[in-house]
Amino acid sequence: SPFWPPLRRITSISTFYLLDHRTRQAELGLDYGRPRAQLSDAKFVFQDGKWQGESGLSHRLPLLQLFSSHDREQSCKVMKKENKALLEENNYLKLQLELLMDMLTETTARLHVVEKKMDIPTCLELTRKSAI
Image (tube, rainbow, N blue to C red; front, top):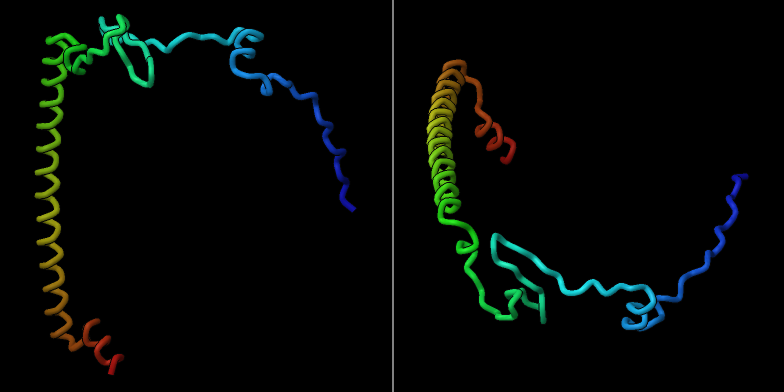
């Protein structure tokens, strides 16, 4: 008969989860304040479900304005380079695919010629005969 381990004993459970939010904050010191973030020179505070400027104004800077024009130019140059490389690779792969399809077509045609010379039934003919 298998040996059954002893049952675990229930440890004492904290009752802090029963307290309301404000009491927990007072007891445990859980007041962290509002979430803050800084992007470049712009500072933001999460307030009323939205990210707002730290000054309290809800102005929204377009993402590109958060970075200097030099950073944007560098990023644009890198992206253009990557895009060009990907387009060249795509064209190369299309050319390879076209070449492989031509080779497959030629090989299939040669196979049909050989089958005709040897009078071997093709797969298509075999499926037709089995269907009849």
